[in-house]
Length: 174
Image 1 (spheres, rainbow, N blue to C red):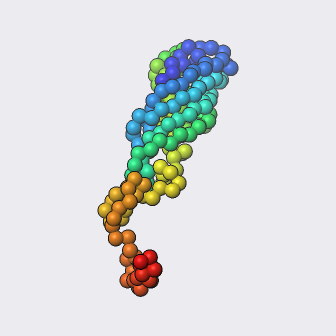
Image 2: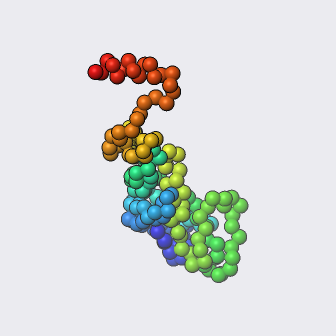
Image 3: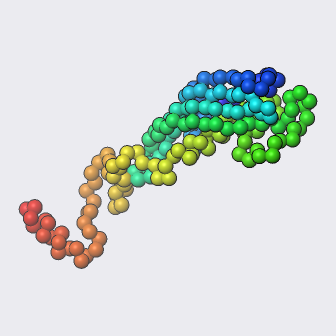
């Protein structure tokens, strides 16, 4: 997701470029994930305003059963971007005072949206991603995925003080 903005930098303030996005990017788990949507770049007096609406499909690992799954999300982005080198003079450019978090263009005036998109996606990913709300996780005894198969491990209570109650339950079932 690289966009050359050198020509747009030479145009008047308010000029825009619209781009359709259907591309891959490096996601939060360092795999290739997908993004579809649009990006609009607007020329400002010092740089560019980037607006985007993207649908993403991100490959994650469930925190309970360790199975891979895809998370779909919709992102709305709005960021500023400034050139590090003035394309008119070819010299390093003094950046405006408040550029913390802004995207800097490289020396060829190319905008790289990959890292910005990855950071937006990370904010959308839950701290403990789950493949589904009712994920049963892994068996603590044998490690089998309880969503796929019912294991035959002893799932009895670990505390012996509950043993008498367990016996009552087994007698009642017989």
